[in-house]
Image (cartoon, rainbow, N blue to C red; front, top):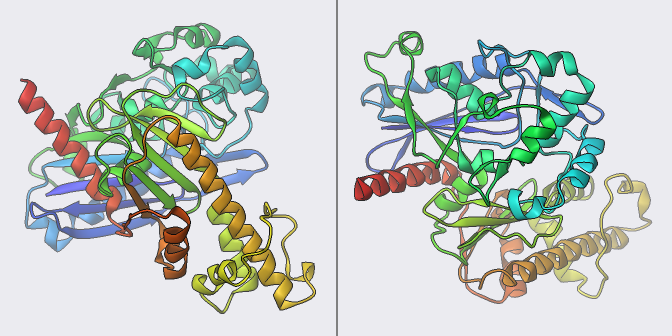
Length: 431
């Protein structure tokens, strides 16, 4: 039995997979994020209590209690972190990856780090990056920054609370902006800018390479007669890609969820990037990933559905694209869309068609960018929007190539187990 934990932005999912690859238990808990303008924060102590209760609930499931848990496998959001003291007690609220407070600091880093794209997997420092927010903390809250003994990402904080050890995985930490892929170390130029040493940061391991046992305190709290190890299995996008069946360079997973995310396996780290691309370490083998992102796809499509098709289905929304193929693409604006914008139902539907056409044109551009890096081989479609048969039909015609549909809600869980097993087999073959 394997316990799998997925740390999302506003909720946490926990489940168990048995030896026959069946999900035998699945639970979810929400925890609040606090938004105030550009500031988006989370209470790390509340996050741990919520996660701890969720794991105990999952372990208490009748199906789980009948077996012995072999390991806890964790996938996680990236970038979210908090400053902590020597006891790993948070000194401030955690700063969520959605937070945009560090625009000035990102611009400052861009001037100081002209070779950032060749080392970090981003075209340039952006406000969402962990490293930009560390500079913000140093400049704007020096009393907190100077008191901190570490700045753990949310998955690293959880691992420390469960095991007493401070370690990370290359997939998540590699996306922080702190890592130098060209050297395989922390970025020494950034350490100098921050005035910090490597001791403030975790030991960075290959994904699922290091497993530390849960502490006696946790074992007693969970009422277990044994201890099992905790492994970090990268982020949710990499795990979902592995769970969707991606295996080799050129395999692509297009996820149509809150964002449109195109995840591609590559054999080398891509350094010629656009602003909508991220590159980093794929969690399996020696491969890397290239991630193309259309941030607001799902937000805008859901808004169209909720405003204009509230009593209907997504199929009826997507049907407008087929009904009005002659309309020009329109980039949507969250502020402009409303019932009072249009004088007729036909105008409304033509607008929806134009927005859908815009995102299809963006998808074409993303695929052309990917094609410049790697030959596209297999394409898998996933995410909540793929429950629409009309949207699937549109994509089939638009892409004009064989597609694999994967709308298994457990793809991330199976992906985490897949990552763990492949790393285990690699260790066995290389011992």
